[in-house]
Length: 129
Image (cartoon, rainbow, N blue to C red; front, side, top):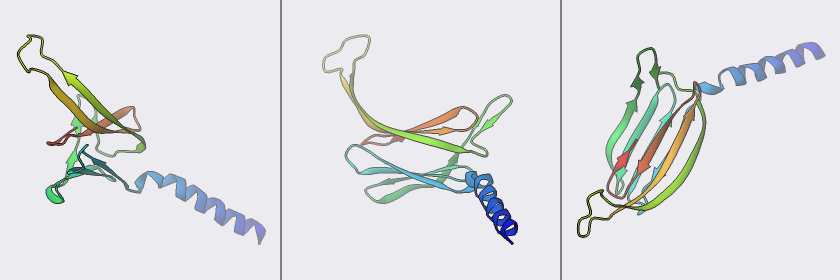
């Protein structure tokens, strides 16, 4: 009886680890002013939705990158994420009057199995990845 019970537990633990990558991971990134939001859902693909002032602009768009021998993002296995903020001033090579541009955004980098990552950026005026 004891071996049957411990065998069931072992099977359950194995099943949990083997399908662990199949569970969806949901993440959110907001712009510095909080008006723009990117909602990211990593499940069978990498999906993202964009909201501005709580109005849905893009809904569940997915992204992939086709390389010569590989399709990144086709079956993503999420590993971890990092967040940060950038506040910088950019100047053109040719100096002009009032040519400094403020570069201010929040970023979220998603790391995936097979050594690739995707970085989302949320600006006050829009998003990038």
